[in-house]
Length: 222
Image (tube, rainbow, N blue to C red; front, side, top):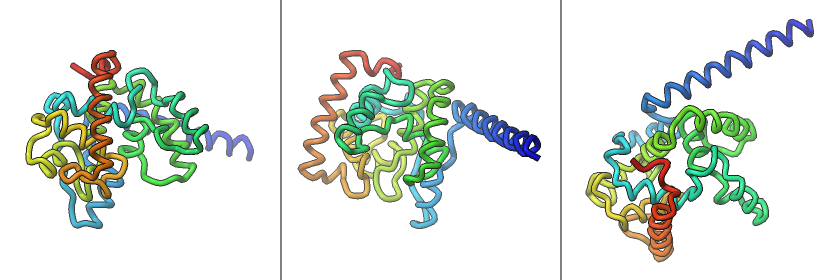
């Protein structure tokens, strides 16, 4: 019985692993039609706004802005920013420890929440995504599924919602403001920014210029 149970468990694990690998491979070339959170919000609100755009149709400064705001060492890690994690532990906070890769995995393949099962799955899938997807693909998917306001998902919908322009026409200031609201998109506004958002946006704009100059944006810039 123990041998049978062991074989059954190993088969289940193998099937799940192969399924996850297949989903990640598909995700490298096929745009996710929705996410668990987006689907939940669409049911709650009666619909959401999202228009998928390729990274080539997004102002380059927008990609640099979100990296500067959320994960400045994005080009230098394999999915986990160990330095940020250590700093967060020392400060007794999880803020800043989650990379763009982790957030993308959570949004595309998992669900929101703090359950250890989700955290464990995120930790297993993130290196797989880093190994199979390019950095440009990770940024592209992230920008298209991130929530920027209630019912507003993706940078194209956000650009039109806040500024009435396409993602391709965003200015450095507009991009910085969009990136500045990402941690709390439902309580912050890019078009009517609070003093905090304005200050944060100035920091993001400076950070975007810095990572462009020092090469930390090279992995996702064409």
